[in-house]
Amino acid sequence: MPTETAGHSSGTSVLRPRQHLPREYYSSHLSEASKARRPSPIRGLYALEEIPNMISLLAGKPAPQTFPITSLSMTVRSPYDPTKETRVDITGPALDESLQYSATKGIPSFLKWVDGLQEKYHGRRPGEGWTTAVGTGSQDLLYKAFNAMLNPGDPIFVEAPVYAGVVPIFESLHCQLVEVPTDSNGIRSSDLRTILSSWPADKPRPRALYTVPFGCNPTGNSASLERRQEVLALAREYDFIILEDDPYFYLYYGAAERAPSYFNLEAQDLNHPVGRVLRFDSLSKVLSAGLRIGFACGPEPLVEAIIKHTASASLQTSSTSQAIATALLENFTYDGFQKHSETVSQFYKEKRDVFESGMRKHLNGLAEWNTPEAGMFFWFKLKLPPTESSPEGDSSVLIRERAVAKGVLALPGTAFFPNGQTTAYVRASFSLLSPEEVDEALRRLALVIKEYNDEKR
Image 1 (cartoon, rainbow, N blue to C red):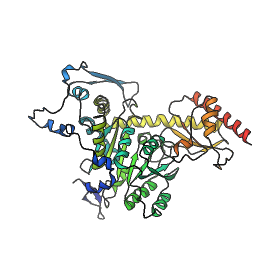
Image 2: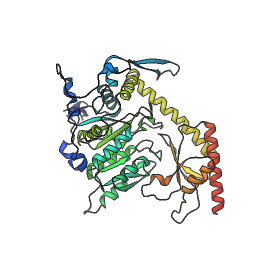
Image 3: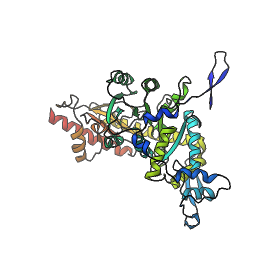
Image 4: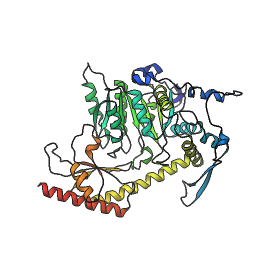
């Protein structure tokens, strides 16, 4: 079992084993459908093909010499100097790996890179009871994780407002969504404790909590270290799994040091076993959305359930996409990837600043907001007349109809509340707009708000 260095009162250090929750613990955290899903009789034996001198009659893999592709190449911008580019070629064994069926969990070269990444950024190493599954984007992995952990009708904690892309998944499972309020520091842990402590004794408590802790979509908020520690403590006390969806982790541009992930945080306390965090990463925001590469890292039984789902649904994530990502990332090295991600986060910081400058110019007195420190969204509350359903007003008609008629697209806040509550909030993305487009969009939006307020008064 891996060991960790812990501080000692004498100033020296001692080695202590990093404990992890046993496999049998997760039985109560897996859905009946997941338990009933059998592993692929073919793909489950792929690893045996790597045994020296093994002659495989196993899989119906096409002969690689019949593939017409003889090489893959791309030109990659240097993470250190944007004026310089490097040609990266995928040939030989790497090309063979990229064009052929591969292990469901991911091609070995990419999995090796992920192992190094999670050690560098989250202090986690293989052998601690966790493993990795590669998916066709993190959305694919979220869908499979929810199906692996939730039975129809089960309750689950979700931060509110919540990423709208997961709501249809929960609805298809007929889940009871237990909304936990958030603010500029993330999940309000005091509210979560109140919900947990007052949960009816005759009803099963939620076994998982879903959260986007950095640059949350839609709020743009990032959870503070204190809130993360409190939520993790509650997970240990009340026995639930934290589903850490973190696509904006590398898009953090706050002035303060980036808070540790839940995946990292749970490993810092050697007095508790690890295994209460299932983490979802994505390369869409830092490399390419079209590559469709994400990866889930967490307790082996939960990730293995995702892998079994993939084996029966699509066999695997594209080997070619994984090979392209691996070649690019190996060319960068981990230091180059860090430099690249810092460049990307700075890019979005500048985009944020332009958008906020436009908001101050056009929406001053018409809206209020917090400044995001990660991601690509502003979440702002319009100052509207009250309605029968909301004392703070309702942005839905204004945004869905009037703003569209004026040539501005945004999302009304109600789309991010599973209960469909009315709200004065709006989500706006600033990732693609030029300064001129920002100025014009916010000018149009301000005009819509003023006209609407004048009519309602």
